[in-house]
Picture 1 (tube, rainbow, N blue to C red):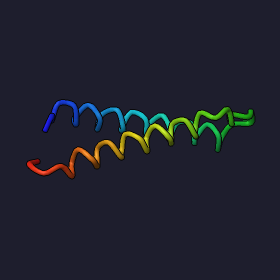
Picture 2 (cartoon, helix red, strand yellow):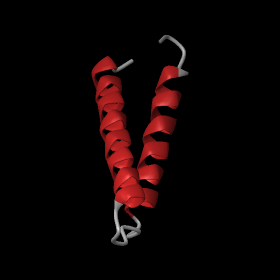
Picture 3 (spheres, rainbow, N blue to C red):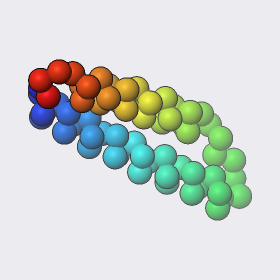
Picture 4 (cartoon, helix red, strand yellow):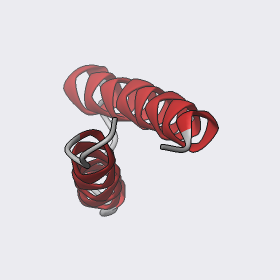
Length: 62
């Protein structure tokens, strides 16, 4: 297993989660409209990365 690549995916997922939290906070506390599709893009990318991580972790010989 490529642990360096897996570590990179974990870091990328954490980065995207932080961006999503920031976006959600802006949405909750902002008077201006922030519904520009960013949240759905972030959620989609998070889902893709999580699926890739799950696939790598479930491979035999891990």
